[in-house]
Length: 423
RNA sequence: GGAGAGGUGCCUGAGUGGCCGAAAGGGCCGGUUUGCUAAACCGUUAUACGGACUUAAAUCUGUAUCGAGGGUUCGAAUCCCUCCCUCUCCGCCA
Image (tube, rainbow, N blue to C red; front, side):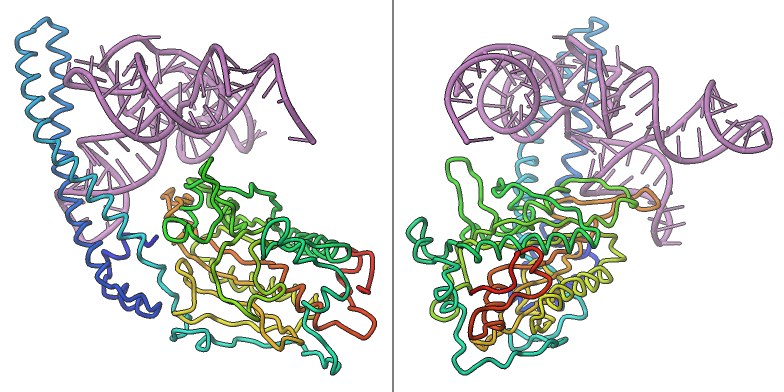
């Protein structure tokens, strides 16, 4: 949620920034500002009257104490009159506050100055491309064929147990999941991230705080009996750890990492885009989250990008880093880098990580604050990124490392796997 | 799921209708004292949204907030209702 203060100070600038994100309904900004004005007037009116009610009530107390019943009764009449007057004001105030809030949450975060113009994925800025695309043999096949050949993931039985998009990992396939998760977590904790294992379902408040609600409830699995949502990413429970927190400046930065399965309903597309491991309803992911001082967040973003990049290098996968254009970035983000790995048999780039700076957007909704050196409360900046999402990593590992008699595993994983090759 | 107890400020904890944004102690921060440290003493110690003043900060001031939401009352931390959470015992259970 944008800070009201920012809108008040420079609405024109806000509109320009929103345009970069291709947010079309700029009238929301004006609606917010006029509601804000109305709210202020109403509150002033309400406060003044309520102050009278309060002081008169005190007088009644004192009169009663002295036994001056008649005077007290007269004052009661006064208060009653005031309260009758106050009633419509307070009703209207509540309405206006609600409307203001409703409008405010419609506005996406403002893009940073670094965000390239553009509306679609083709406009994303290719910041870096590295690693070597493997030269595959002529008979190389996509990962879904390899999976079947080596019997490491059973989609059919997963579909039988639950439904399509719920894979059943098996044998070395299951072990590979476990190895990747352990390796990623170890890599993250070595960089100073504290490991968490959070709840996999969250309540409404948590889903609202990270922005899944009110708009994206359709993307989450929902437990109607208990009013819980299955998490679409560890970002939700992990970022909520510090909801409503008042931190000390010295507490920052707070670095957290967590592995969780992620559940996504996404109606999505069909065909090759969703074949095999490309898109699933349940998948595994290790997430990193940081809460930082506002002055440090872009520095932090860079360090997180470097951090994630290190993983791809260690896994020996060809990758590229994209800076997302205004139209392609998420609602809450101010600046996002996507990581894609090249999956050689599909000959496609697959998104495996997305690292974003949300600045105060999430923190404002969640009220994650710290006291600065003057003792004044300030919103922290939040950042997060995947480090990493497993399925597409697995797809690329399988495709890129296939040889005639199996699939070679990268050296960093071998200690976790206990084998060097899937055969 | 059943029975009971409870949720108060950074912490402990008092507070059963007005003088309570809240005693007391501890902690923290600032000051005095001291060669230094400790101790002692004094003071400060929430957040949000408004208003006044101001270039701004500081300051002053109003309203709200004692788990959440409603209600009773001139007046609620205090009484009533609903919900959430924690603890103890019982039941069920990995």
